[in-house]
Length: 212
Image (cartoon, rainbow, N blue to C red; front, side, top):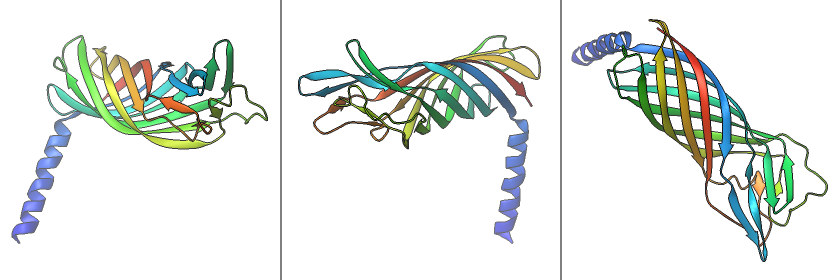
């Protein structure tokens, strides 16, 4: 009888902790920027990666105590594939989907009118090439823009500011750096072509959240 009693006690205590937490459900929109990865093939060189585009997101989070919280985030990013060298470039339609969990460290309490926070976490990013592959692509000696998809592990680092506008709602501004390994199936490197560096996806978003 001892083990069931302990289990029941833990469930009651957990329910009490969860009920004391404040939950947040929100949506946001913003803009996405990328770094470029250098590619070389013999004497030829250029850059490959993704173009800037719009981003939309959703989140479910909670405050554990005065300073610490966590949230699950989903972000859709419209980011066309690209490769360029000098004045020559090639592009193809693409998009990506990021899902991750972040730990939040707040600088102030829930009741303050301005509440900055630092965020860090991890998850997965799913890249998709949505455009048709061209019969001939410029700069295919450096990188080939494909109509494929692949998933890569994701590191999320950033922060933001929350502005409570009532007991049940807040406005927030978020910045994230999504770091992933190079998606070599989507941005395929032909024989003798070499790419250097990881991809950094910088996203700024403004959103509204409801509190419970």
